[in-house]
Length: 354
Length: 272
Image (cartoon, rainbow over all chains, first blue to last red; front, top):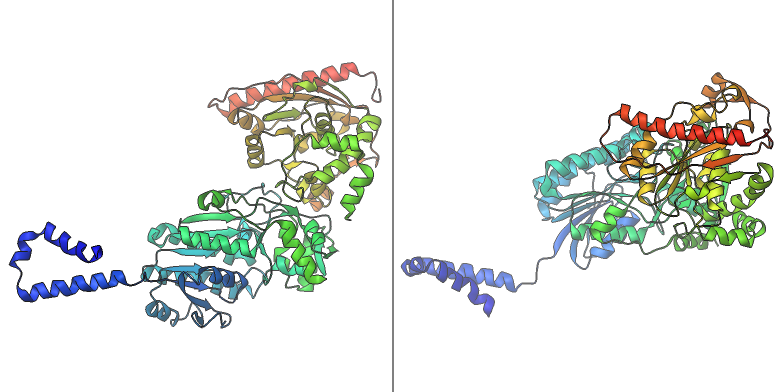
C-alpha cells in the first residue's frame, strides 16, 4: 500500500495549491496516470533484452546459458541459423544488410554481446574484413542509434602480433602490431581500432573490449583447439613458444561478468598459468610433426603449400614466438578468477582421443 | 613419462634438486613462468652444467656475497665468447652459492629468440629477451638480473679485441635509477679464450639474419674462468641528461674494467 500512496503524497506536498485548483476532468486524468504507474510498479521487473552475435559458436552458447534466466536473449549469427530453445529468438542475418536494423526496431535491446567475429583461421581475408570490420561498424552504429548502453566486443590476443621482440605479460596499452606482421590479421586490428574509436566517441555505449588468450575446451573450433584435438599437430622445429589457455567455461564467465558489471575499457583476459606449445601438445596426447623453421620463409612456404586450416601460413609466427598477455587488469576490475586449471583442460583433450 | 621427467629423474642428484628448490621461483601449475622459465629444464641443465662449471671451466668466484640476498639487483658484466656461456656461469654461481642462493635471469640479445632450439632453451633456463619492459617488470618483482650492456658488440668481438670493453648501452642505468636498484659489477675473465674468433662472415650473418657468424674452430676451449664480483653501486634517481647518464655508465664500465684487470693479474695462464 505504501507504493500506492507515495506518489500522491509527494504531489500534494510539492504543489498543494495547484491540486486544489484542478478541474474534475484533470483530476481524473492525474488519478489514471498515477494508477497506471502504480500498476507498472506492481508488474515484475522487465527482463533486459540482450543481442548475442556469433550465436552458432560454442562461446556464445555458453554465454546464452548463463544469461537465459535473467535476460531475454536474441541470438544472431551471419553463418547459420541455430536453435537454442523456444524462448530464444534466433536469426541468421548479415550485419551489413539493411534488414539487420529491423531487429533493433523490433526488440528494445538493452545490451549487445558481440562474439560474432570470424576467427583468424576462417574464411578469406576479404570475407573476414567485411564481416569483422564492416559488420561491427554497422552493429556499433545501430547500437548508438537505438540508445544501447552496454556493448561487449570480443577481440583476440592475436592483435598484439607474434614478434621475437615481444616482452612477456603484454599490457593493454601495448601497440597492436599484428597488421604490421601480416595483412591477414588486418581485420582483427581494424575491428579493435573501430571499437576503440566508438568507445571514446560514444561513451554512452559503454563498450568493453575483451582480448582473450587462446580459448579452448569442448566445442571450440578455433586453430589452437583443432590442433590440441588432433592426433598429429605441426610444430616449427626448434620453437615452442609459451602460450596461455583459457577454458571456454571460464571465458563465458568472463564475458557474463563484463556484461553484468559494465565497466567500459579494453581488457586482456588470461589465466596466470603458462606452458610451452609443444608441452601442451604432449599433455593432450598429440604427436608433434616438426616443420623446418629456417630460413624464416620456409615454414610459411610449406604451410602455404599444405593449406592446413588448423595451421594457416599467416599464423605461423604465433607458433614460433610467444605472445604472453597480462590479464591482471581484468581480474582486478571485475574480480575474476579462472577456475579450470591447465591440467584439467588438457586431460579433456587427451580423453577425447582415448 | 615424458622425456623431461625421465631426464630429471636420471640426471638430477637429490642434493642439487633440494638446493634448486630453495630458489623458490614462482611458476604456474605446470612449472613455467611467463618468460618461459621451466623448473624441470632448469634442474636438468644445472645438473649437466655442474661438471662443465666445476671441472671443464674450473670456475673461481670472488665477492659473490656482494649480490644482495633479496630484492632487485642488476648484475652487470663484460660479454665475450660468441656463445652466452658467461651469463650461464654467472647465473650458476649465484644459484648454487651456499648462503642465500638466487636464480638470476640473464637478459639476452634480441636475436636469440629467432634462433631455433637455442632461444627456447635459454628461456627455459631463465634467460629473458633484453627488453626494457621485461627488465622493468622483473625488477618490480624483486628479481636479480644479469645484464651485458655491450650486447652483441661484446660477445661477437674478435680475439684480437679481447678484454677491450665495447660501447655500453645506457638502458640498464636508466632502469637501475628508476627502480632504485643496486648494480653489482662483474669482471669475467676466461670466456674470451673459450671460442676465439678470427673473423666475422658478415654476408652469411645477414643471410641467416643473425648478428655474426664467427670464423672459429668448432671447439670450446677449457679456459679457466674467473668471476670477480664488485661491491654494489647505487645511483640516485635523478632527472639527468643523457650525457650525465653516460658519465654514470662510464663509472660502472670503469668498475668492470678494474675487476677484469684483477682477474687477468690473478691468472698465470689461459688454462690456470
